[in-house]
Image (cartoon, rainbow over all chains, first blue to last red; front, side, top):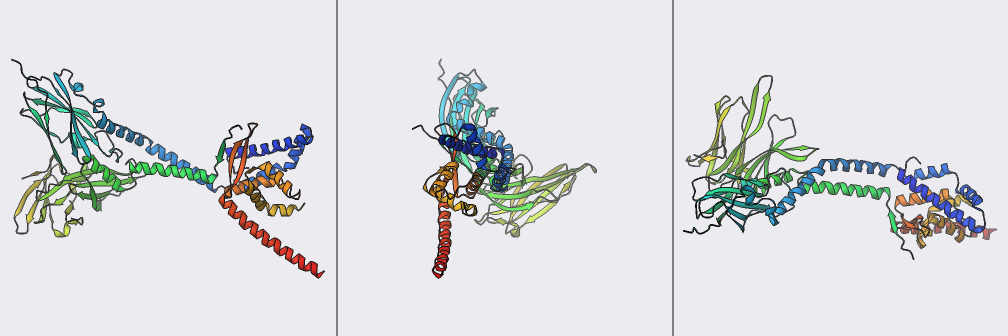
Length: 233
Length: 219
Length: 111
């Protein structure tokens, strides 16, 4: 049986052996002894070579060849897209984290752990398919000027949209946000993780941060209040 | 009665069909997620999402000059942006883009434009670099009838001026007028300036948009 | 024992055996001998290739089931296509048999 695969051959063998067993059992029930029953069954079965040839004719090579080609193509496909698909899942996970638990991605204390005041916020605004949210603010010195820290997360509400390859998924935002305070000094910058970003902004006492974005037809304007403390005398 | 398990034995044909279904599913999921794009449209969606530009549609395409490869330059435009990108196909990555430039549309301005270097070749025998630039954008003000694109070669290369008129506009069917202007290749051009000036029907100028630099700026 | 007839109509016989209930190979041989009053004693070498061919063509489908002794047996089940094919083959056989009988009757009445 040349045209059968090993598994198919094994299955046929099992089937025929089972048949022999059934026949032997039946003959033994009639009174034959085991050796005679075996001999009779095997003889009655016929020429094994002929059976093999007849079986072969029932297994034309077409579907097997097609199956092997498809299996090879699938293997190639998995090798090509397997890794990128996993990265896509990773990106989606980051997106979800930015939406539900941005604290896991970045908190103001990552930037500066000597903060006088930290406050949790939930200021949200929509920017096309992306939602932008200020989720934390921190102040180095709540009773005077210094540095303020803003933690901002952004996520695409279409969680399974086509994935942007690479790291800086919300780069379009982080590079273009305008942060204005009464201080003449420009924001120093920040650091972030794909969909969450912490900005370090020089402020004077009592300032709030004016956050604007205006690009590609999407604009928003947010005023972020900082957790100043009343100066005691 | 002891519980007897029944296990269906699939034929070769059925098994093959299952494998084909699995392969098809893998390909479709890869396409939908943008991992292996089967069409340039999917690549465009990724570009749109990268800068959050909103929807755009393909407007025109042209071969990259002198490129024997399989890259094509496509212009796509929408409400908020005009995107010029080079799309190519490979069996390893599907459709992908190896160059993309965005022009932000400012509808309060007379027109929007950007410049992009679409090709750069270095000839080691002659020690020469040849660059090809391309200016593209959208005419915002309906009164603007002509655009003049000027390439000033400050060091090496040569100056170029191109007049764009009504015949050159690429229309998208909703009244927007886009344009795409591929300049002649410049050899050994080390420094340059590029600008676009618009003119109304009565000859009045709209002002000049300087394109080179970090952001286009109006003068 | 008309072995020649056995070979030609094996498919018809097998399909009609399965029309009643699902069977495995040995069971089919026993049943066939019993129903035909030992006229048809099919050889294993004939039956199994035919069964695999029918499986390939989609006329029967196979499944495995454990016996009470723990052995695994391959059962065959008639599919809808198989049932339609059986109807067709049986009709063709009836026409053929009817025609032969008609000729025999008329030649008998001649005699």
